[in-house]
Image (tube, rainbow, N blue to C red):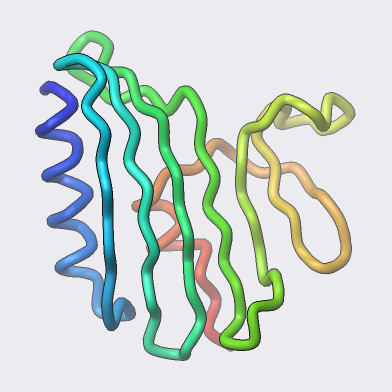
Length: 123
């Protein structure tokens, strides 16, 4: 796998996910095995998910060096933000964590597929 393959997998995932009404994605291929992907997903309930991933392909597998997934309500209010910025050392899952309106909490390492499959709660 190279970075372009990773990008094509992301694009395919987005095309198949039923809760996405519209999406835009940009990618920056730095080398054959390093790059970034960022995008905006407009969801069926009016909310929006912005995402950014900095990816390295190691041993034929994608490694998310840095990520951020920010989910906003249709009014622009934060619902959740998952990221791995190294600033919450007190959390057991450091550097991975999730923010919501009430604070910051431990979170397993996330990727776009896990956010779409498990993270978006349409209540």
